[in-house]
Amino acid sequence: MKKNKVAFIIADDPIHVFLTKRYMERTGELDSIMVFKNGKEAYDYLTAINGVKEKIPELILLDINMPIWDGWHFLDEFQKLKFEQKIDVYLSTSSISKEDYKKAEEYGLDDKYIVKPLPLNKVKDIINVIH
Image (cartoon, rainbow, N blue to C red; front, top):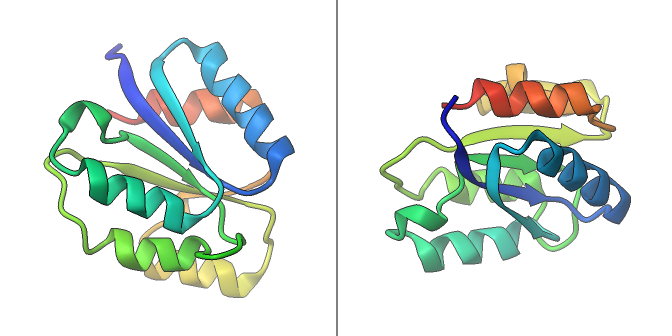
């Protein structure tokens, strides 16, 4: 299996971030896991490194409800960016709202909508599915 280089966790819940990062590390499939506390931080980083292929993530785990820029705002801006390689985005959220799920459908992410907490086997499945 191809080793994935970079994954982003964009979430403001420190417990979720800690557990998800530990699970991702345990897979042994990632070279780097970067954490951002909101969508604006992640977007600013992505625009700064656009064109540096080694730093572009192959996977983004995105929370919906965060301060500054929530997940929806991040997705709106993220879709405007152009990258050579594919970036898989998964929504990891505590929201069980039908409205949020419908909104995920609008972004084409209804099959990548995961309610937290993410169990280890789900994290492994996500990493195995990408590229």
